Image (cartoon, rainbow, N blue to C red; front, side, top):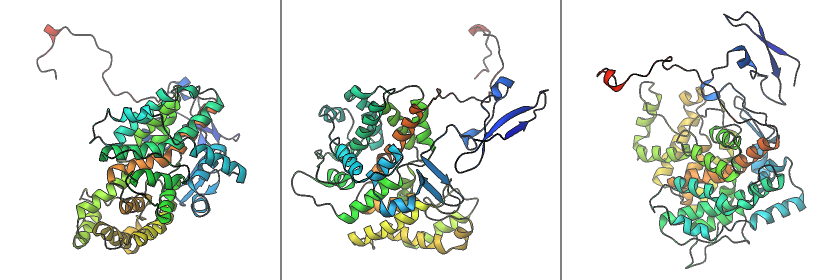
Length: 434
């Protein structure tokens, strides 16, 4: 905090307004406009790109420098030395666990991976061709009907139990969603496998034969979960916070986050990458589509390059590029047609002056799309994978908000509709009214 103030003069107002200016640990200073409404005005900020809606000690991003910190730890260090469940503990508790805490936390998660057997019946209410995200919205929201024993949001222990349940059960529900859309039997989780291994086992195993999880694929999957764990106040996280500000239970709030993530401008970006590669279709057409991407009058855009937040490079992409190389080598898929297109586009983006000058480097969505496609996960499941990894971020932000004093979210608007007018009876209305 600071004693600095911003002075605001508005035409038509006699008094000058003094607004407090706050400074966080890192990042730009923030002008507190909370009391503006008492002077008869408020701010206009479509997309909230210049508005801090909350205080948070979880994640910090500096897009200009390509910095992403979780509780102060750089994402590159976490990706190299840590694993997803350790990062979950870090986000939830604020510090890295010691050996005993780590073992206890992983045991809790491992022993909560099963879902109530009645959930199996719930799945049958969906069409087999339903989009996996539609199923996830419904099933996750319905968990409150099965686990309502710990939904007192004022109780810290209840909030922690709900966090454990959500992190533990999301891989199970995601795999069940995939199996259901494929018409295959559900696979129960196994307590002898780690988090990422268990997910791949439930996704691709079947009761007819033993399924052995590749350590390389499991490591890549764990990195995808880890790199998507949290990303500050993005659209879905803000949605979770807004829903949570009403006092809604955590399962409903996470379902709201899943719905927000479903949008192609948010969680559907890596799915859009694969759609773009399919549209290009053949390496011989790459130059054609690159030329179109450079043409400012052509609406076509190369998906998976550049980032709204990261203006220099996406630090998560560097990690996933390495994972993508490992996965393709492990699976012997260097000659897959779509993946060859992807690698050619990657080379162009890293060498072509047009992309370099505009800092249009491959981002996390580009590489995660390549990895998931290579592993055999269909594009319709890509956003489900994103939701799985992001669940810890959502629940931690929700818990942080509930733990502090908070108010129900209520954005204002700039009204541009009709002024007050009188009701007109049907017989007196003009036939030209539309």
